[in-house]
Amino acid sequence: MTREDYKLDPNKLVQFLKKPSSEFTKEDLIEYVVENDIKMINFRYVAEDGKLKTLNFIITGLDHLDSILSTGERVDGSSLFSYIGAGSSDLYVIPRFKTAFVNPFSEVPSLDILCSFYTAEGKPLESAPEYILKKANREFEKSTGLKFKAMGELEYYIKSANHTLYPDVDQKGYHSSQPFTKWENLRREAMVLIAQCGGKIKYGHSEVGSFTAGEDGYEQHEIEFLPVEAEDAVEQLLIAKWIVRMLAAREGALVSWAPKITVGKAGSGLHIHMLVEKDGKNICIEDGKLSDTAKKMIAGIMDLSGALTAFGNTIPTSYLRLVPHQEAPTYVCWGDRNRSVLVRVPLGWVGATDMIKDVNPQQDADPRDFSSKQTFEFRVPDGSADMYQLMAGLIVAGQHGLQMENSLQVAEELYADVDIFAPHYKEKLEKLEQLPTCCWESADCLLEKREIFEKNGIFPQGTIDSVAKNLKLYEDNGLNDRILGKVDKIMEIVEKYMHCM
Image 1 (cartoon, one colour):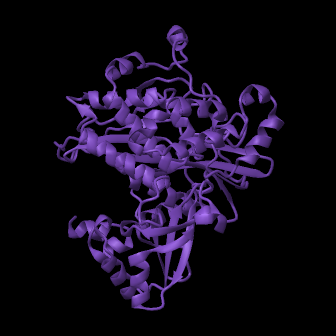
Image 2 (cartoon, helix red, strand yellow):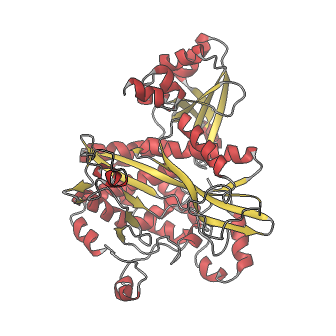
Image 3 (tube, rainbow, N blue to C red):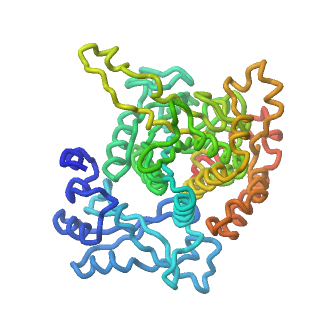
């Protein structure tokens, strides 16, 4: 990074230390604490429920600070993970220095650091969400020689007392501006704070969903990130969720990541974009076309798509979103620029050159190749996802595709170049496999494919058992058929799962 890069980086630690966060050391953090009058250290970590936890430390001196950062601390594992017994429940939480950020909300100047779980023997907790992802990422890189990168699209609804002076049109909120959108300021403030906390943001905008129910107004917004290494991709989403919730709570407004919050309106997804690099170069594009590597990974995701819903669609209302004609996938297929498919290859920058010069004749032509921005997008997950397990599952699926002997054939057979609900596509549509329609079916799909996820010890057997068991507990087999057309019943379920992850 250049001097200008450090100056422009919104992360306060990067600016001060003049080094990328991946190079932060204990001594760096101590220097920042001392020079910036930080009074408190907060350990943050994600347990079984998918939400950020907090452990607070008041700094009492240099030795105390060094001790906190050198040894971590003990926590009660049985209160964080249901499968850890109270008889021997102690775990360590160990800070990962590269994740440190200045808490933007604390009145007491505070440094927050994400942590990993370790056992009494000083070994990583095999079933810890962040370690499952680390194992998957490490195995992918080891076996393929490729680096997996990803980013998420964080969609959410925000609810408040409606302001009717400039009402937006129902379900026409896409890229609306103030005064037609009432919560643009909150989204912009969230983006600034997320970036200060280390998140790499692509952009933010209002989304399609907008409607009024009684005296309440609802708006849908999205914050989309840039591709980064898989573990960083998950953690910037976790911190972003926390920041948006904190800002909404300050305003007395409800924010929800729930996949469906009412009947007949747009749901919220958690689309995940992926790419793979070799020697720092995106290899999803080859000779101006989607590469065989990308197609093979897509085939792997197709093959495991039903099982992946167990990590990415974890509540009954997930399957109220995954219905036809709602820009959400229902059938196992993929395509270019097609929002009705399971994996979409979005519009890239291949063959579209010199547009800037065309708009700005005074500008010199730019000879650079921007095809490296190409990704492929998994459109199934939603805000109920266990993001660590979901990302780990996608990495496993990508590796599975690279190792499948018939992956290119599978990719060719499942390619859909049109709206899959078009009348002339009906015959092929009938041959496509459908995604699960409820949590119960999702659990069955996971159990059927469990050996692939458990291979190389990435997902422990107990984790797969626990995920499947929790999905089955909803007993929602056939739920969609039972509540079809019964608005009161649907809204009862929607309200029950309004707050997820």
